[in-house]
Figure 1 (spheres, one colour):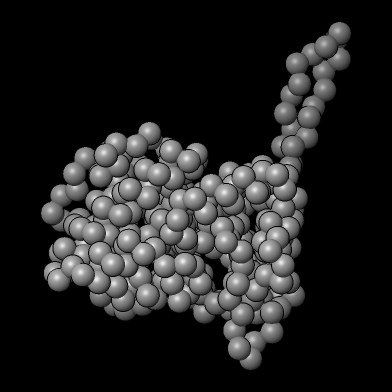
Figure 2 (cartoon, rainbow, N blue to C red; figure 1 turned 90 degrees about the vertical axis):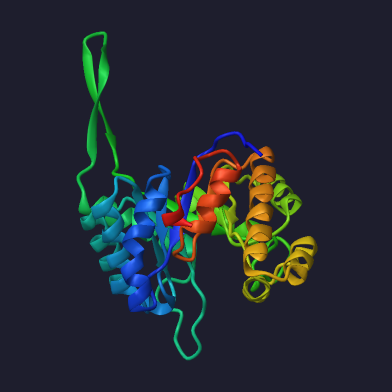
Amino acid sequence: MVAARVPHSFELYPPRSAATAAALPSVVDALAATEPAWFSVTYGAAGSTTEASYDVARLVLDRTDVDVMAHLTCVGSSHAEAAALVQRFLAAGVRRFLAIRGDLVEGRPLGDIHSAAELVQLVHRVLADREQWAERAVPEARGVRTLHVQPPRADVTVAAFVNGHPDSRTPTDHLDALLAKQVAGAEMAITQLFFHTEDYVTFVEQARRWGITIPIVPGILPITSPARLRRMLELSGEDEPRELAVALDTEPTVEGRREVGIAHAARFANDLIAAGAPVLHLYTFNQAGAVLDVLHRIGFTPAPTKETT
């Protein structure tokens, strides 16, 4: 099936073993060959993967021409620590950030920054303090030449929760929070994992009525095993995609379950594009094969080679 072409992007996370670290450069190369709009790099709770996240960002910047979107979290971070991290990424050449509150860690305080909206503002403040404002000449009018002063900008993205945040106290808390992030300077939102196209459509319609105008990008994960599906449902709290669950449970072979997951993700991607998704954001789990197969199925790329599957 061939979908209308929209930009796509990939999420990477810091490797958790020497073997996955060794494999990551070839994964990045294979994914970069599809010309993604950016790679996002996750950041562990309370700064638990600071160095590893930075190393992955540098790996992408050094090996490719693709932008990096560095994740930032509030939990357990002081204003000074968060600002220093933003400075470090900016110095490396990162100009995209994903600002999220992050998961609360038992026994650890939230920190100085209490919401993703505050973190969005901090990113913009750090950039403005670090770099000179730009002067742009305005064409002369009646012999008067003026300058328009523009602040430096970073692209700050935030998270969106299609069916509400787990900590929401009312049915519209997630919409209020997303609007606050937009007002703070967020320019795009990426959804947390969900499984039903109609939920995305409903959420976008609600967001627009709420005054939220920024692009809302769906996150997609090819799920190729019953165990992974159960884990994703546990983490997300989303309703089970019944058709996918039954197909994975009843397919007896690993290769068959892989085919089920890729075919389902390709249909999901097509449906989301038809519903108006401006970008497809693909969660990779640091593996190229499944997401490359999905992109091929929807007509975005040629068939992947054996080395990347």
